Image 1 (cartoon, rainbow, N blue to C red):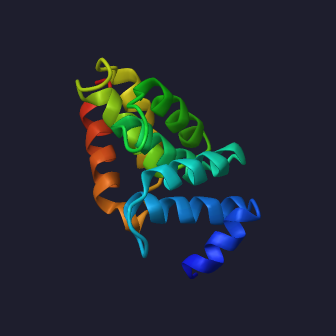
Image 2: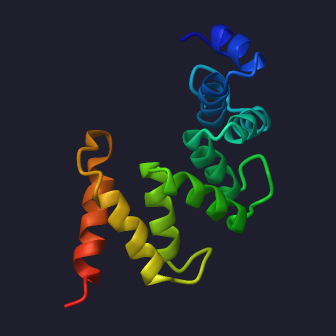
Length: 143
């Protein structure tokens, strides 16, 4: 899909186009990185309950890309998307809860989200993440 077509659809409030175009601006795919546009587009798509938009918007809040860093807001968005089965949101939450960086370590929550992600073993686009999830689950199972 070309950027012009995506832009027209996004301006017509098509949530899928808003999400895809937002990711293009977030990651610099076929357009220069523009965090302000990405934030606007992904916010609009997330309001339409696009879990992929929520995950990408959460990445922006987690890292402070084009907005103030807001880890609690990122967690809220990740959790909404993760509950709806968004694999990468599940992985992001598991990593946040298992590493002592922006949140206190919470092994129970890390295990919950790594377990959910590990169930999606058919993810050939994310084989490394699935292995990471399985390894965490295996190492934290009650004996």
